[in-house]
Amino acid sequence: MNNDARAIGWPLHLALLAIAVAFPFVFPSPFLVNFGVLALFYAFIGQSWNIAGGFAGQLSFGHVVFFGAGAYASTILQLRFGMNPWLGLPASALAGAVVGGIIGFLSFRAGLKGSYFALITLAFAEVLRILVNSVGFTGGGLGLLIPAKMSAANFQFPERIGFYFLILALTVVSIAVAVWLKRSRFGAQLAAIRENEDAAMALGINVFQEKVKVMVLSGAMCGVGGCFFAQYFLYIDPTIVFGVDKSVEMLLVSMIGGAGTIYGPLIGAVLLAGISDITRLITNVQGLSLVLYGTLLVIIIAFLPNGLIDLFKRIGKRFHQGGA
Amino acid sequence: MLKVEGLTKIFGGLKAVDNASLEVGEGRIVALIGPNGAGKTTLFSCIAGFQSVNAGKVTFQGKDITGGAVHDIARSGMVRTFQITQPFAKLTVHENIAVGAYQKFHDRSQAWEHARRVAEQVGMGAQLDQPAADLTVAGRKRLELARTLATNPKLLLLDEVMAGLNPSEIVEIIDIIRKIRASGVTVLLIEHVMQAVMSLSEHIYVLSYGKIIADGAPHEVVNNPAVIEAYLGRGAADSAKPESSHA
Image (cartoon, rainbow over all chains, first blue to last red; front, side, top):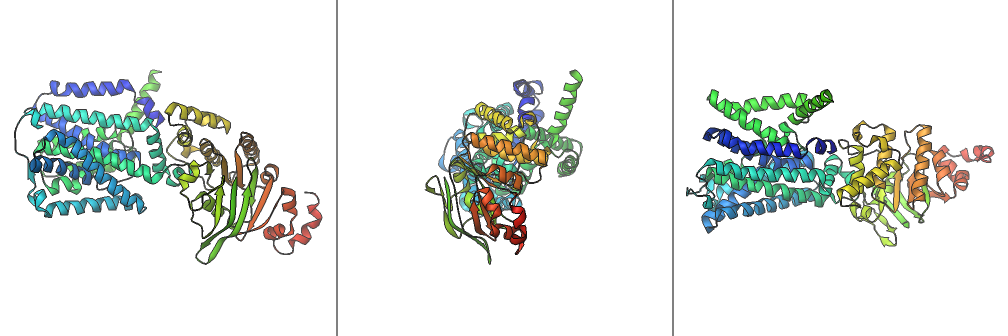
């Protein structure tokens, strides 16, 4: 934790931010801007998973439940109650936080840990998917279509670059949260809980309370991701926003990049978006990107169990020693 | 400071702790000894809130804490170590101790500074950046001690912090525990290393088959026939008598 914070200082944060800001101007083609939006989108929701799964060690397999809650909360408020879609951002954060709090409270009160916690989150996600699928209020299996009214005031940017900078801002906030966790008392307590709950408890940490808190935080972030998704694609249905796929993607970008690290999800997300775009360009085999991604995951687990970020750290260290 | 009255803990048909009572006065070092499987660690777990109790009462600083949550008890100033060390393996020594320090200091720089001081106090100043997973047994035992110490406890429950250490390491730890007491912390320790028990403690409780069978000053306790019997078997008290004059 300490090493990480020292290695990743302000120069790196600012350099990455500068690259990200320059990206759509250097590569203005809609295809590449779309790639940037998706990479940052996965980095953002991956970070939301990482905060619970990586920092606090609460491995969730159904994180999509917060994503879906956020997507449906903002879309329903907009379509059924005529709320300004921009207010969907705080509303979806609230929805994600509430769902996170409830699921955290129930699972942790029951003492579920490790794979049992992973399974119960998966179960919650599936239950919500089926519920949303069968209730008329949510549009059922047909989903909800947000009518296109292109204007920034309506949260529909005529140019993709608007979405790009919005998701960039959200990603910056999520990385700031991760940096704060690395350096704060709350983050230290989460790391202690991840490593050994009994020892954490013995030192006076209210393990239950801290775990529920982190689910609320993670759920809120993931919910915002759901709102962004709905506004970007203007369509949601239960399979897309409550399906297992998104949960797996969030988990994969964190694990491949490096769970429990600040930049792990971003690295994993750029890779995921890159692989899926490249495979779509050169072949039309459906799902090939996931096959490649799975292979990559196996290789990384075998050789870089702490994620790709480890590779960067090793190179950095060698460079440093060579220079000194 | 700590008062345990008639504490009983039953696992299935086994009375692991049977009507045990003990008292630890402020500023003292008190030892809890007994043969393997006597129920010492179970008694510790019950006191610290890790296990529920079937009967009895635990009072800490005049407050009934029986059945209280572990973290509440720890925050009130009674903190335990684990016999089987429980390091935060992937964190560094400094980070491990900082988790304890954060209980007292909410500010990062204060907590880290306090953690560094505690590390030096237990002789881990040179290992601050080492991952806890890389420590030796002796290092891990020290880390347990440092982490609890960093919470600024009033009463430390030390569960076999000397087990597995070599004689010179034991001498060092004894010295550290003395200093901890001198800084105003009360200590209740479980220990098998008699050299440590005899030189450190002012009062000893002996637990056997879950019952407190004797208590008193160290030299009284080791000459107590019931204690010798508990350790060495029936009849041993008589044959041990000639040697006991040396103690």
